[in-house]
Structures are given as C-alpha cells and as structure tokens.
Length: 470
Image (cartoon, rainbow, N blue to C red; front, top):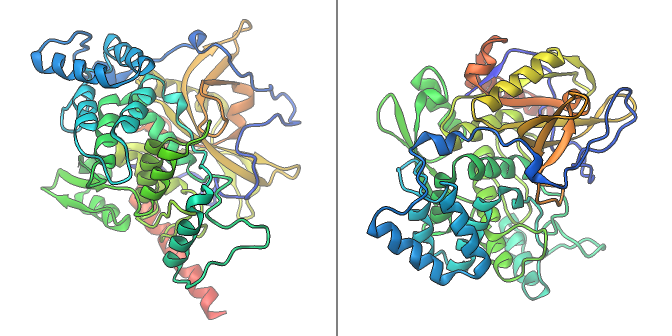
C-alpha cells in the first residue's frame, strides 16, 4: 500500500468538505466540458475482464453431491426472483467461484448464511437474499441511510446519548438529531463494498456470512508486503489503524474485520423497515466494517461519524485511510495516485500529470482486471473545492466520434445501474485514483504509505498542540 510523492498540499478531506447535498457529478459551466450521459441500457457497456472469475477454474456445473445438495436447499427456501438470480450466478461461474481467503466457494458461504444462526436481530432469508441480489447486480449497493421508525426512535436516541455520555437526549428545535443521517459519508466504504462484490464474489459472500453471524466478524490472512516492503513498517500501519491482528511470521498476518457496535441497530431497522433506495442490512454491515477499518475503529453507525488520529473531520475517510482499507480488504498492493494540485486553502491550482497519462493509467488498470475507485472534486467559481465524492470506474467504451466514455458506478445517485461520463468531463475532476503498483510505478516515484501516514499523524498532532497552546 503506497502513495505518491506528488504535491504534499493535496486536499485530503475530499468527501467531507461541505454538508450539502452535491455528491453527484453535475453539469458545470467549464469550457470544453461535456455533460455526463446516463446510460439506460447497461447491456451496451463493455464489461472488462474479471480477474476474480479467472483466478480459479471457471465452473458452471454442480459436480459433487455436496454442491448439488446445497444448491437444491437454497433453491427451496428462496423466492422465485432470487431463485432466478441463483441460477444466473451458477451459469456465469460466480456461484462456484472459490477466489476467497479460505478457498470457500460462493455457494459454501450462501449455504452457511441460510442454515446457520445469524446475529440477534438479523434474518437468515433477508441476508441470504441481499447477498444473492448484490452478487447478481452489485449496482444495487447504496450508501443511503434509512430513517429511524417512530417506534424505535426514543430507544435509538437514548443509545446515542448514552454513547456520548449524556443523561438526557438533546434534540434541536427542528425536531431532528444526529441520528437522522441525510448525507452519508460512506462513499469510500460503499465503493469498496461494490468492488468486493463485483470482483471477488466468493470473498464478498464470505464477508457477508461472517459479519452477519453471531460473532459479527470475519478473519482474513493478508501478505505483509501488500502494506509495506518492510515487515516492521507493515506492523506500524496495522497498529496505527488499530485493527485486531495476529502476525504469524514476517510474511503474513491474520486480521479481524468487524462492524462497530451500533451497526446491528441500523441493520435490524433496515431488516424490518427498509424503504426503496435505502441500504440493505448487508450494506449496513459491510460499510460499517470498512469505515471501522479506515477510521481506526472509531466509527459510529448511529450518527455516521468517526474520530481517529488521521482526520480532523468527523465524516468520511481521507485518501490515506481509504488506501489502507482497500489494501487490506483486497489483500493487494494499492497505490493512491494524486492528480490534482490543491493549496492549503483547498483551491485547485493545477494537475500533477497530463490527462493522457491519467487516462492511460486508468485504462491499464482496467485491462489488468481491476476496477478503479476514484475521488473526484467539485469547485466553485473561484476554483475552490466545495465537495468531493468517491465513485468506481468499471469499464470504458467509445462514442460514435471516437471519444472515450468511462463506465462508472456511483453508490449515491439513486440509480441501480452504471452511469457514463465523457473523458473531457471526468478527467479534470479526478483528485486521486487507487491503482495497482504495476501500473503506477511506470510513471511516478513511489513513497510508501506508512511514510505519508506518519507525516500526516505528526502534522495533526503538531497542529493540535498549537491550538491547545493558543
């Protein structure tokens, strides 16, 4: 997991700049900028090579008695629509894919979800259906929080105030409180959730099973060199992010992933009171878990806020935290490439590389079988950044004039399908992108992420000391 030695004044808090609803890309008055075109026919998009389905032998037929029994049992307990999705997963090779950390198949984990106890408040069939539906179409993943039903509001407010150490609830005159999350800060976490479902179906199902089980956790063994070249530096990162782990040797460590303690409250409410376009209980558990990883185990699902040592804001994840989370979830050496030059006043002053290089790096990553999670920014008339958001580039195509079109997934657009942006529109807005090391190292000098993390920590600590002194 690395970052690049580009501009040291890049704007970290790209997804928490203003508490206004401007997450989606909107048309601007920029010269030579094309309006984004939303596709209404996902079939016309070019689907990139899927490394997950090629990592192990692609199987589309049930070969053993055990597999047939598990498939038949699942078919009996799900509804007609979910049964169709299950069959489609079999025919496309997703169901028998075994590209998971423990080599279990998607089918193995779906069967465990259906036949073993779930955490208190969760429902086997609901989690099973959510998992199958998400694997059948990861575009249904959303970061939209659900409302708190009146029947549970007093209890949730009391729990929130108990967490804060308050004896009584304090609700503004508007009638809302911080448990009424209108603008979610989980765009990073939901993008990672999408990527896991899209590229690593068996591992996604394994996470779904573990996070919804009574232990509400899942263990994953990762390679230390996917975090840093030196084992001690990798351990520094694991300790800094406070994720529970056990180091086996100089090469491997087993990490424990878990949602925050209040995630079960949100998951339960979404189980019994989920409205259209709101998160599923599975989305709640996944996004809470990835927010916990990135925020150094300080996330609170009730308020969608976090603390932690690397970020002074209480919403979202910064670039450094995002890269660490991606790296450990995928067990891949991810490099965060910063493209925009941003000054200390959050003003966009230029770019660290030309758009052709930017475009080439993204396309090369797609050709390697990776999706590319990017952070983009929006600016006002003075070029000051007013908002940031994370989306995932999943493929490309060309229009009739030969212009490149990026096929993307946005978990905050209320659309359960891909969207398309022209290169002229999207490239100038990309602040950073997570790329495979093999792609990024061709064009830039790499600085290990623990170096950037330590620098960020020291700067924040120094600023805090100055504020106290003042």
